[in-house]
Length: 78
Image 1: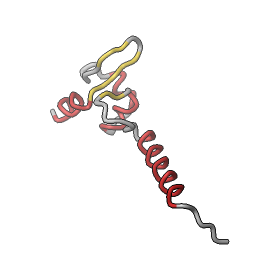
Image 2: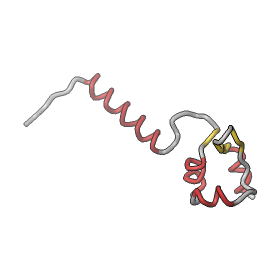
Image 3: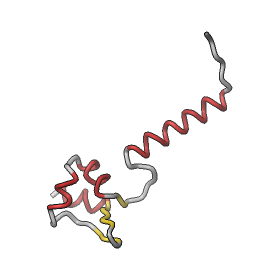
């Protein structure tokens, strides 16, 4: 069976696939802010380390805890 798809449909599928990959990697936008889970993945440590280690720089927005990429880079560059 051979199915021909219009180029516009193939492009739309590729664009959506790229969006999904970026979402799964926590890199949907260029924001410097990350959730605890995203920050842990970014530096390659378990999220529990971010909960326990009070020296890791973070910011609180109500109940949310957010991390900035540049602060994590500086902290772990050490």
